[in-house]
Every structure is written in C-alpha cells, then in structure tokens.
Image (cartoon, rainbow, N blue to C red; front, side, top):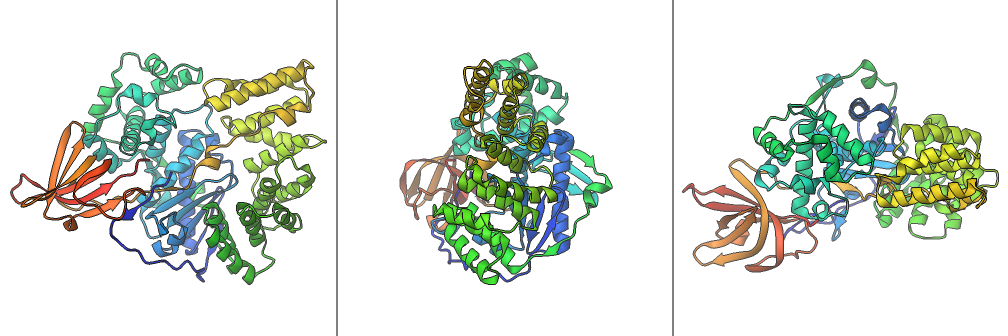
Length: 610
C-alpha cells in the first residue's frame, strides 16, 4: 500500500493540473501498451525493457506464469511536474514518488518518469513480479513472494538490450539488515498478510530486506539450495504447517546462521541472461494519439486513482475536443459508475457505442459494461460478446475478457458457448493457480455433465490455499456432488456456486516508492524508536533512539538545525521538546563531530506504521 510523505514546516504551492497540450504517442508491444509524452525511440526503449523483464521471468519461473489476467498499460511522463497530477495525495499535497503501480480489475497501469534511472521503476517491477507469481502452479508463502519480487526488481538491461542482469545487490536492504535484529526464521516462515510483522513499519522493512537476502542466498548462494526450496514448497502445497514443511526440506541445516554469514560477506552475485534478437526487435510502430484520446486516457487513470473531480475535468476536455470519441465514452461510463450515478445511462451509452477499432478500447467497453450491469444481466451478453470479439482480434486470449464472457454465458439460458469453453480451458491451463478461472471452468464442465473432470479441477484448491479459497472450493465441490447425485439441479451450478473472488490485481491499492532522504558523504543512519526529544540548556536538542539492544544518541544546537521529515499522517505540523504521545519508529541521521566521539543530528525521518 502507498504511504504519505509530509516535510514538516514546509509549505507547498498548489499545482496546476490543467490538461497539457504536449504530443503523446502510443506503441503496442507484444505484451504491453506504452504511451505518453515521449519520443518514439524512448517508448520503444521502455517497451523493450518491460518485454525483457517479462522474458526473464518466463525463463526463470516458467513461460506460463507471465500470463497476466488483464492488459498492462505503461504511461510515460517526461518529468516530475507532468507526473504530479497523478500522484496519490495527502492533505491535498502530492506524495513524492518516482513510480506508481495501479493494479485493477480490468487493466493495470504502470506510471514511470522518463527522467529517472533504473531504480525509479524498481517498485513497479516488484509488483509486476507479484502478478506473474500469482499464476504459478502453487501458492507462495509471504516471505518468498516478497523475496522474489525484490530479487527480480533489480532487473537491468545491459549490452544494448542483448543481455539482462537480475539478482543484483540492494544496498538499502543490506544496510538495513546490518543495523537491525533479524527476524527469527520460524517467525518469518509463519508470516501472513494480516501478521503484525507484515504491517508494522520498522519490522516490515526488516521483513522485506530479510526475505530478499534469504531468497538470494537460497537461489545464488553456495551451496545451492534450490532443491530444498522446491521440496519446502511441495510440502506447503500438501497442507503441512510452515515450520514443519521447512524442517522436512532443510533438515538440520542452520539457515538462520548461514543467512547472517551471507549478509556479512557482502557478496551478492547476480544472474545474466542473453536474449535472442526477437525480444528487442518486435514489430511495432509508435503512433501519435489524438488530443481527445490523451485526455480520455488520463481521465480513466484518475478514476482508478479515486480522483473523480480531476477525472471529470479531463473528461470534459476530451468531450469538448471530440464528442464522439470512443475512449471518452467508455471513460464517462466508468466515471459515472464510480460516482454511483445512474448506471442505466452509462450502460445505455455503452450499448449504443459502435464497436471501437482500437482493440484495447473495445476490451474496456466490454469490461465496463459487465461491471456496471453485472454478469447475471444476460440481456447484454451480445453487446459484451461483440466488444470482446473485436478486442481478441487485436490481442488473442485476454484472460479477464474470457472469464467475464464465461460468467455471463453460465448465467444465460443457452449456457456456455463451446468456443468460450475452449478459450477458458486455454486461459486456465496458462494460469493454473488462478482459482477464479478454475472455478468457472469446473462449472462449465459440470454443465456438460463432466463431473469427474470438474472435481479434478477443484480438488487442488481445497488444501494449501488461503482459508477463503479453500472454503469456496469445498462449497463448489459439495455442489458438484449434489448435482451429480441428483440432489440439486444442473442450473444450481451457475446460480449458486461461489463466484470468482477478488484477486491481488483487483484489490491492491496503488503502489508507490517512498523516497527517503539520501545519505550524504560523511553521514550515518540508524533505525530505531524515539519516545521523547530532550532539550538541555548548553547541550541543545538531544535524540536518544533505541535501535535493537543499543541506544544511539545524537544532538544539535536547536530543532531548527535539523531536517525533520514525516511519512505519517498523525504527527501534526510541528514538534517540540518533551515526550512524544507515543513511541515512533524513526530514521536518525547524523555526522561525527570534529572531536570524533559525539554525533551531530542532521535529520530525523518519522517512518510510517504500515
């Protein structure tokens, strides 16, 4: 989730979010749509980077895990000023961010700046890895999911795009681990999404860093431990408890001790992959976008960022430029639905919309109509089918479109279309861990009286998955048994079976990178807990920060000499001497005084709880 940044005592001027007149271009690579205010060459370079990253994941994980449920649109901004209107806001002020990942039910947006280096998009590579991992054959424990996402986020193209490097060192993680107490291995193995370790600021930072280091050691350390790692994952998939699954796979190996040694060694070797010519030389041409399209795309993005007022301004501009613009019609329907206005008018506008020639706009028209009316409203099935047919003419097998159409057909009197059933099987085979596809496919098989095959599809989800998924799987399995034995009608398969649930890409909030203060030459930093600010006459302001088992003390002549920064929304606009309302996690940055023994405070950063 994204966090908020406020510089204490710093007033920010309001930023003008008026629509820009700059020229945007769009390039459709095999697996991404890249658009923005950038040259054709820059768009191609960014597309190559993302295609290369996807290809690397396919080689390391497997080709099928890189199948994403929805299209991914990368929007390129030339500089921070152009990006600012799309940043999350706190107290009306934009949060500092160098990249933004906006996962959604029907589309993923990745926002990048064209004026920052590779580290600027590490956060979006991290989140894209999560999307890929969600398609794997078996569920992944939290620590390994975060560790792999950090491991692959170091992706870098070299030799003009002919090679790629992954697994490089993440300096901030290594510093963090050396200054913090490691999480006991058994505690790390048991972390879940609702665990305090995953949701508390300072320890969450250790969790990410330690998960990265442990993953790196298992994959790249000596001796190699990938065989034991795979055995551990197999044990988890059979329903064994996390610690038991680990001990059975790793035996008497003292992994905690090995990890501590690995961290102290400072030797984190990466992997190199060489690409064929095809990865970097896909056939795609950047085309100029119409001004109405530019404003309509930005309006849609703002709707998904919950900034409906700014979205309305952009949309009005798009409609003024071209009242019949198809992208604007779809964005207007989404905006009306987001504002909980009359869905009837929004649905009517989509029903009367001529089939767009742009495959992506046609896809979004279909998904927007389903979202507005619901998959059970089968009167709109033909409209949805025509939109998706046009979309699949430009991009074959968009998994979310296939699943949406399948859900509507299941609810219809005619039942599933054979062509949709075949497409859903293809999608399900490419992403076996996506339970929503599996449940829909099992329902389709049952509608054809293929009960044994339907049960085989559902069985894997009854163990080793999160409890809600297991419950849904068992419920569906019970219904299949009842229908097969004649205790329930076949129609109950589509009307009563658990619907596809929420997925990571439909529930996650936008993800931003927190921009912490950079250390300058001669400065040192420690993370710890601060409970008071002491003001002593003749000694100035003193900060005593508890970091692990030690207390780090540093002072300054006055508070005004210290850079105070908060990433919290509950601290207030000023600080003074005395105890804090509650102990707070902080970064304390100092430089050594001329005497070589005392520390002079340079900055204090108040870290978020989450």
